[in-house]
Length: 366
Image (cartoon, rainbow, N blue to C red; front, side):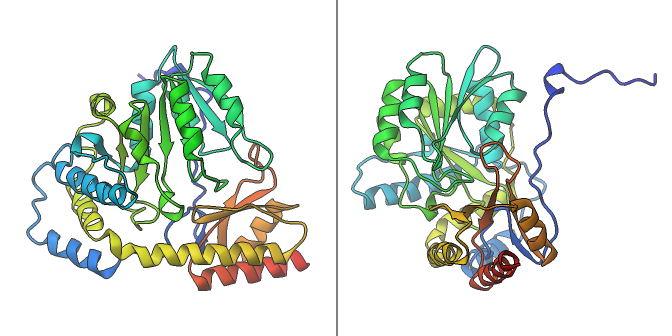
């Protein structure tokens, strides 16, 4: 038996997701936190690993971690004057946001169903829809990358949309959605609306309080960005229990291993220890944006509420190559639809950012 039976037809036109990872001295391409976890978190993780029961399956739903996440979110809600309180039934933990995004496609997508996607944005949303046989309707953003709010409302009013993804801050453009628009959207449709808040810690605040009155809202979070755990693969969703139940039906059992749960608990218990690092990234973001705008009058620099900055310039692909030759890796979107001529620059340490700016200064001066 020599020949292999063909894979399913849905895979024929799908190109595997490529995170564009390359080795470099300065990594400013993947929106990672430039610093690892604080020492207090590391110490708790090390202590927890002593006598660790590697031979036992993990809690399949990570219930202790769900409780801790709910408690943390409740403190944040109370600080903003909200009386809404989450329990573990409002939380589901996954193998990073990636698993939960795929579960979103499995549970609310599929043949005969439709995703409304607002582009440019994270390409995995549409890729997951393709894998699950979900139709994708893509609406473009405005020229400045802000949402075309009326176009979105008009489209969902047709009644055939099953899923909507709104990303705030959006990757790779860095803009945020307003609470007023989210409320109007949630009231205008019965589709499940995912609000992807992977970068929310670098912005002004979450809209998770809207979950209380809107069963069709799902908020996605990650440990990968602000909480320095990109290597751990841990994320979670916040929603009403009826939505969480549907996700549990499609998720993989034991998808969050016991070590990741231990690390997640240590991060959540000590989440305040990450605040200085988050504030440092936000301060550096302001410096980088200001200095980028002073470098060249041929570069468009977009405001950002995340830990990255999107820029547009002539010959962006050539600039990317020259940066890489200097040991600096940034993300090249210059040949992506809607992002022509754009590079995305992750905010690193002060020293990394200065190295990037100096390299750009030299390259643009040639």
